[in-house]
Image: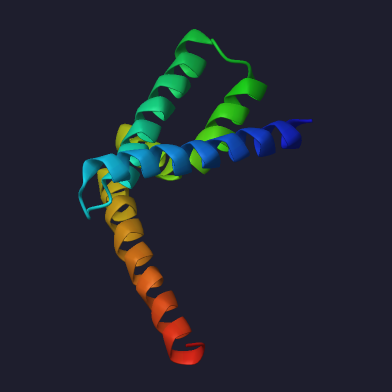
Amino acid sequence: MKILLIALAGALGALARWGLAGIVQARSGFSFPVGTAVVNILGCFLFGVIITLAEERFVFSAQVRIMLLTGFLGAFTTFSTYTFETAGLISGGQPLAALANAAGQVIFGLSAFFLGRAIVRLFFL
């Protein structure tokens, strides 16, 4: 049942991301990916709200927490999880690890994106 709930919440999160990012991007008039930025920042905010309520106020059961955080927000934006984990490193007294995580994922993520693009263009197009 847990897997089904995570999958359902993930589907809803993906649809929410697609819808919200598309609406914001279309209305912004910018070529900069403001729709994605809004989704990522909103996802971080929602992750902060939910995890705080779950850990400090015990508002959500473990099942609801995993459905919201892993399912919905995991599909809505993985940026929220990345931010939460980086914040955890900072809170845990590991600022250099947090910096390495933050910078490393951006740098290596962009590098991997462009490498994948180059491989496809080189061998398949």
